[in-house]
Image 1 (cartoon, rainbow over the protein chains, first blue to last red):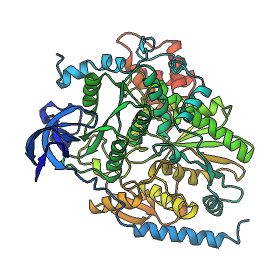
Image 2 (cartoon, helix red, strand yellow):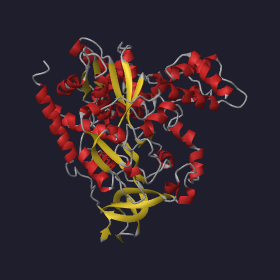
Image 3 (cartoon, helix red, strand yellow):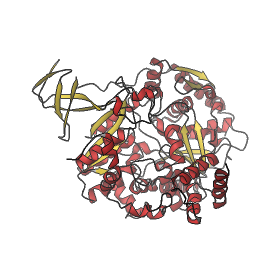
Image 4 (tube, chains in turn cyan, yellow):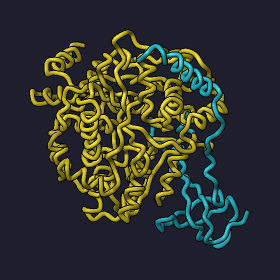
Length: 104
Length: 471
């Protein structure tokens, strides 16, 4: 997908390569780079996903990185109900209904 | 031009932090261990009433106190005769950014603006980022949030993604990082580049901002029941929530009120592990922060942490992930309150605690937080299930963090699990001893300081030190 100047995009960059990372962290973390993602308005004239680009953040600060997505959705949602919890809720209601006569 | 490699930036950390705080920490750094904590807190140049006024102008505080009548009936049904304290909850979700963190941000950002800063930077993956962004927005200040969001595959668990979205909604520039404590390096770089205020969670401002919460609890409980509460339960992570609330309770004259911490038990999961990152179903209020911060507060982005929870903690309870999800369901079903996970950690502990307290006693759960996409048990547990976590009903005691979530099969499964506080106290004293330069010992003043730090007595500190040197 082609993005053009002024599009709201997300870029990705490497902050620390694996060999630059702190010594105290777990091996699985030190095996991968520390990466950063930031969103902003594309400055570069025309770019495709994967191109090196420049953006301006909402505060006007400039960032360089690899173009990763055009106006990416947040993606998180409410997902599906959890049947185990639905049943728990019903049980609790029943317990209180039973308790009605027992507790003033 | 300054070098921006990792070592160079980290070597400048103290000067960077200090110039970004507008506070003079020098008097508090003269000794490796001991400093005047009350004098540090007195750096906040506002009275309690002035703090309340500043917060009121920002729409913060004065939240409702709600008695959980249905849950209290359930507690009475479960408890032995004569037991079953009444539980109340402070509905902090009503703050502008949806959590009590607005209290901490409000005073900090007021101070930042008054000190002439043009913007603020916060390193947080939690509700605090949204709070700083919200308070910055209403003051016309810039806000940058540096947030740990993704694992190395670019995947973030739903609650963290939601917290990042909330920061963006309030106009913050959000730097989203993969897993690792070197987030602090990026945070320092941003401070250096911008000269913005370090909106740390751990300044005296961020703690003094919570004190009105403790005061409101006493005022509202006196109005509702005629007396201050017997216990207040705080969800505990970095310690600011508990510290500020406890200080407020004391300022309101409720010194006898027990202050109890509660965290979710995530034992076995490493906070800096790329692979454990998305196997945690809670982003805060868990033992990964709670235990280390209780045992040693000075591990933050300020030279001296104003959040010193062990000074105020009467008891520290652990709850299981499955218990908190269960209680979240109960709060919605029985009380008609859909709220986010943070306060429900304390609520899970409160339901167990209420059963060992007398029926004429009261407990306040001192926060709720907003619920939105990503924050519900439905989002968290669906994400977990997709990643192979075993979710089942049963005894939460069988839960293994990162492998299973066990939702109680009966409310009587909610249990009290005490953290061994003497052990945490000893750990702090050992660490303090280790801070002393070779050949110098802790004197009486230091011992008194450590007794206050650990809510113990000088003899306890001396005994610990003796046991350490005998070993």
